[in-house]
Each structure stands twice: as structure tokens, then as C-alpha cells.
Length: 134
Image (cartoon, rainbow, N blue to C red; front, top):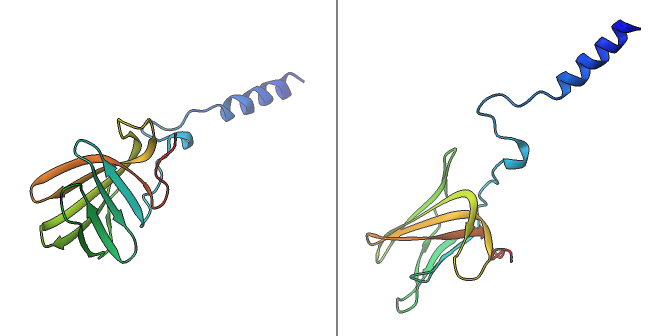
């Protein structure tokens, strides 16, 4: 009887093991960045919309910038799009992680950084059509 209790206790304790050092718990796993995405920022206002065919950057007081979408490159930490436009190369880098646009109290699942004409624009991103959550 005693050996049964010891075996039961050992089984119970083995079920309580922690994840290996450096492992990400399932509850903290990052979301994959989708192929179609909407990114936006404030101060200054900007938006990049990416679908299967095109990349479009809009900003107040600037003409829209569009280019064909050649697809994303992915690493373990980021997803990047790059397109040649009339204003220079447009780059968008998206990383998983909570983000707030700082003005609307909306939260987004991704952080975004756009670069065009030497200007860096920081903001947030979500899957296309999902403009964050209140």
C-alpha cells in the first residue's frame, strides 16, 4: 500500500514539472503574423495596408504610395515587406507583441515599423480588417 502511495505521489509531482529553461509557455506563445495586415501609427498619422497583391501607404498631406506586394520575408522574430515606390523603398517590419496606438485605447497583437525615404514611422498592426480591440 505504501509503494502505491509513493508511486501516485511521484506521478503527481512529475505532472507539475515546469517547462525547460528558455521555453515559452503556451499562454505566452506569439501569434503568427498574417500575410494580409493593416499597420498604423500616430504622431504622425500613417497607415500601411497589405493584401496579396499590393502594399499601400497613406499619410495626411502626402499622396498615397502603392506598390506590388512581392511577399514577406520571415524570421523567428519579425515579418518584413519591402517594395520599391516612387518615393523610395518602403519597408514594413511587424513583430508579435501587444501594442497600443497611444490615442484610442485600442490594443493590437503586433508592433509595426515603416520606413520610407529615410523616415521611420512606428505604430501597431493587426490582421487586415481587424483594427485592434477596445
